[in-house]
Amino acid sequence: MRMSPAAQVGAHSLGRTARVLIVDDSIATRRLISMAMSSEGGIEVVGYAPDGAIALEQVEKLNPDVVTLDIEMPQMDGLETLRRLKKQFPGVRVIMLSSLTQRGGRHTLEALSLGADDYVAKNNDGVSFEASIEALRSELIPKIRQFFDAQPRVSPATVRRLAPPSGEAFRPAHRPIRIVAIGISTGGPNALADVLPRLPADFPRPIVITQHMPPTFTRLLAERLDAASKIRVEEATNGSVVEPGKALIAAGSYHLRLERRQSDIVAVLDDGPPENSCKPAVDVMYRSLVDLYGSGVLAVIMTGMGRDGLAGAEMLKKQGASVVAQDRDSSVVWGMPGHIVEHGLADQVVALNRMSEVILRYVKS
Image (cartoon, rainbow, N blue to C red):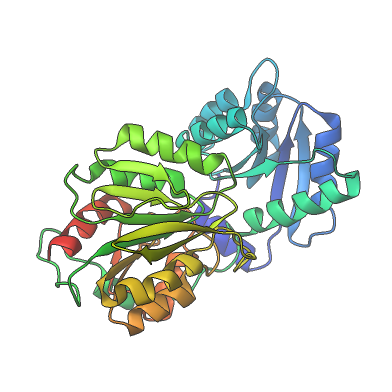
């Protein structure tokens, strides 16, 4: 019987190696991916497949924990392979590999909506083979490990205490909420697609979002969410006005900061260095809200690996802001929200299917 993701995490924390199947029609790319993982302890490449049909046979035979899956393949492409893979082997984690193009971005978002757990954007134009290996290693290895590394330790009693009771009134925010600020990473596109479309067109506050994504992808994500939502959803540009009923998503490869210009608060694209190995980074966005909004911020930390958002949420909390974290069960990876709970910053811990309800209650409380 195939182990569940939770069982896999437990097994790996006890020392079991994560087994990876590489699926790509290019021999050179399969070699590249294999070499990127060859020196990593705790990860073993157990097989290869040049197309989707063979991949499904190999999954049945080799029982991998993770499949790296190319999107563009002959005969059975990555999207069709993913559909069948998730139906037949739902416990296997899938990381898509796609190009940093508009076509690649659209396919990646479609793959995530079909159940892919994460993606790696390939950008090897004009770089050496060695540089390609190193770039892929720095991107792919953390995304494999995130599913198996130990997550923040929080007692079940703490989570139960912070979980809002279904159907009951929420404790009011510390101060009136003036802006909602969402930090999110792995699993983010699907989570945002669950939350934003549930908000009403007359949502009374602005929303700003930092989602860890590369250029092009964030614009396509904003367009996809805008088409599905009653509120407006846009990729932030320099000077975008922050206003009620509109969500601004940080542009890929730029931090999102807010600043006051005369009577408006506007977005600023910040080309500063990465923070927490991220650009855009949630902490940069949160720091910019401290002086502008102080206690009037609802900071929402959702699914994602790492600690990005922790330091910024701590600064906001000291100003009296409210902080909500997504719960473990509904998160693809409970890294970012888990650290918020672990450090005692969360006012409430909320399942994904109740997040829009919670946000509405906070802004209206």
